[in-house]
Length: 224
Image 1 (tube, rainbow, N blue to C red):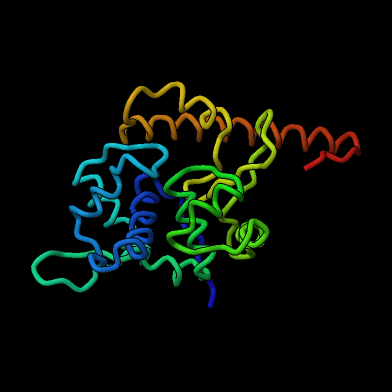
Image 2 (cartoon, rainbow, N blue to C red):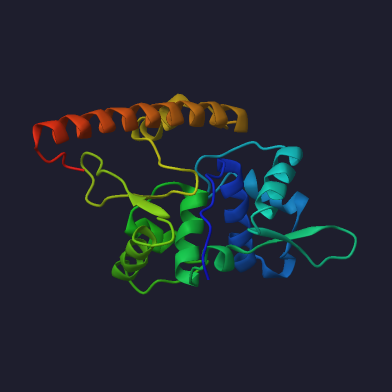
């Protein structure tokens, strides 16, 4: 079955998806989730990076947008509408890959070792090498690359990985974010940051195109 590429999702949309997958495994008795439960999961202070302060209307809008791609569906409920994810089917991924993506969506970039620990409540990996196998599969997918290996930080022993559901991450924004934010970050602030990141990505793409053109004219390899 052919798969249409997804457009870049917002941080809040990936947070909604991550919460739905997480709560399906950690609190199955209350899954599918009501909007109130989903809002609480999105604004949760623990096991979240970054911590956000979304409103009920913002979460509802994110849910509605995800429903248009069948990533979220309305589940069975009595008086209250409940929501469930459809990540496995839409992205055609095994449970191991969904666990990794979910943990990256909820906690930000992580090393394979951190992912093994943080995925435990969703899927228990036997060792770090098994995490790396599924990270490589997510990176090398023919349908659409879903993760990227980030440059190693000074002094770090392992490279970190990030998901690509929000588009390519920018190192400048990633390193500046923790020191620049005092307290919770709002969805509006993240939207502004994302706009700046998109502008920087465009500039980098233009520079790469210029370098490639010059290399072609000179008859030398561009180096990718």
